[in-house]
Length: 355
Image (cartoon, rainbow, N blue to C red; front, side, top):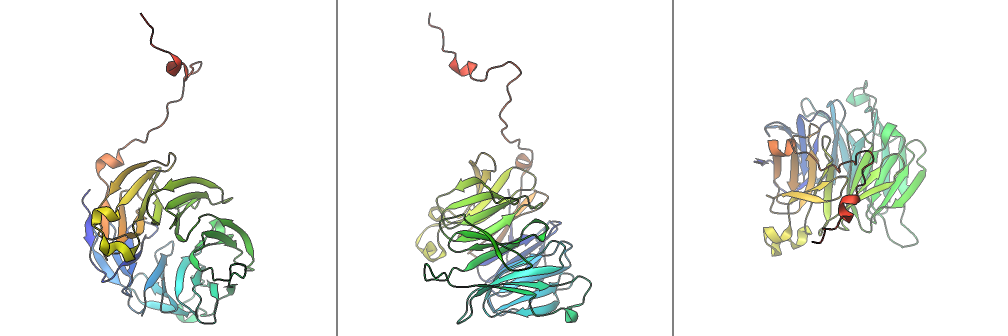
């Protein structure tokens, strides 16, 4: 598997995402300038210039017309994908940590960190597709306040935001390991579960939004059902998991992570374990790794066609990997079903006859 090295950022990568069709790859880093690349050959098509802080999150709409970025400079921006022009800037009271388009692209939601006297907030903005940029409202339709947890006497900050199927609710993850569902119309909290013991770094859905994966600093990634939030599988590692994605064409999961960025300079590349790890979705077993980065992997994305994946790390590089034919043709191990009348335990119970 020969990777294409995408050298377009000056600082560590924070997020990589494909568009719905898989022909464009969007990357963001701490250098204030998101980039867009051609998915099939890694050619850089352009940049989105205008932010003054780290880009923490981004999202492209279903039809690759409008692109959203969330930045530490206290703003979220909407861009036109075609030419990279900024359509609208949405100011927030604190650094914007996450952003997500709703299904249909008629609204989007953001999460912002607490700042001075202002609490963390979830904001929902209306963005009808037929309106031009100057006619869109800068004010959120709904703001949900996330106050300090008085029982623990500390702030619990949101880390990711996503829309559940059919825009029925907003899924928000927190740095204490909690998952919460909020009503996007009223702002009421609908449900809360403690999914992890430590901070949830990332949440990723499959394309049909039937399943989602959470990646956590507690060394695990967990698979949940989107309908009832039922926990199905746990993928255990020996390091913090920064991102995990589901393959659309195989029952596989890709995990990325590594040692904390602060301790990286004291260890060699082999010790830090900076590889992408492949797990089987059903059996929870690791069956392969892809090495190459010189720092913890912060972001992963797999092409919807299942033929390539991209990884972005603390070293500032994005590696675009194309799968070999051997992987694409690989058959997953499927337990053989016993034929009618055959006892599967009979073979095991047979002991060798003594002469």
